Image (cartoon, rainbow over all chains, first blue to last red; front, side):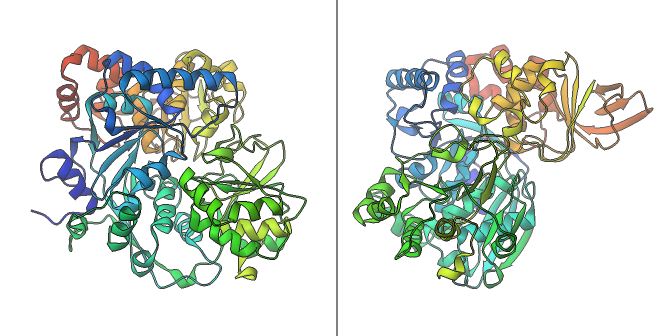
Length: 419
Length: 173
């Protein structure tokens, strides 16, 4: 058998035969996910196919994109999903952003997961193949427990060395996107490796894989290791399998290998209106950038480790009265841990607005919609025109550290001055 | 008429996220490019083409983007390259996507797609542009979308029908 990438190995296991990049296959699925927006659009195609899902225990339906419902139209769509889910024996979840929920509760190394959301690659941080599709594909998959794929090639991204103080995983992935461009890994898997990745926490890895969507990737993946095993144990699903068997073989075929020196990465920001429009924070801050809103949230960057960074930077500080600061923890689990640690009380005392967990302001439907001409610094993953509200608003993407530092000054600020 | 767009036309530009609660395809067509090119929905005619650069349809997995364009009446989107999920969504809803070098196509050009020869014919300039239209795309588009294809193949064996479809080869998806 030819040496295989992780992607080829996982697809082989789910196709029931050895496969290589380029092949068209039918593959069985471990989990299928659709949220409150994409599930609504899947109901009609599903009804045209069948009246029963293949396995209700393997289908995850989180309400996160606009929950609690911000208007009657959304409320009625959610009601229709609830009714359908109840009929199918599927439990609707309301405990956070779909990708965080999948990571905390479902995904295991070697799994093949299909999600009706473009940031589904997030779950690849656990050594699984997690792929985003649209609502018709999800309807077919909910009916059959399978999907067709073209096995993608793999781009290997190796990050060696260690990050300097004030530089974080969001800066790493934005730097990768800045170099590769928004279509740089189109139709491919991005496989992360190297010394820095091996030492990175699962939270850090989730930030990397989450944003592979922004380079057009089909999936993002990290070799599962003992950190992965510990994370799964901590989240109530011990994994006893051989993790190294999932790793890419020596001599496997990568489309390309991109190398980064962690020590050379600086705090960066993605400028409007493209995620690959990346510049050093120091350069942009020097020009002066006043902010109207700071959003610390999303499936990219609002886990407990992110809130810990924010709490550390805000110790003994006051927040600028000129900026609205909104904090939306990625899941109820994160929310409750932040409550236990006292973060939420301290953030609230400083004047930050803390919302329930979910997608929140990220996609401009509730929880912090931007007005005409407003400027927002966000820890999320997209800064497209009109993404968070008015088409004349502007979105800058950065790390939680940059967001926290900027909340103190009310302007874009280099976080290294606080590290 | 050809509607000319540049590179990196994302799904938030095609159907902005705040219209996510619209499920009626005819209503979706009315908000296609509502901010990026407001005249599009008002003036687009059946059989028009969208001409674009690299990475058309990047961003969200929302099928609304492909549905809105299909129901706007455009005959096809011709672009230098397409984002993966958008390509798959377009295939599923029966929107024809053609990958070709679009740099020389102008708004007023009279163009035609020859699927059998995989070329875009520019009658105005007397050019034939090589195009990539996978067999998979042609088969499903001819049926009007994946659900119609599956209905015709027989819903009793969905996996078998899909297996037969992908065995016909293709690319991109």
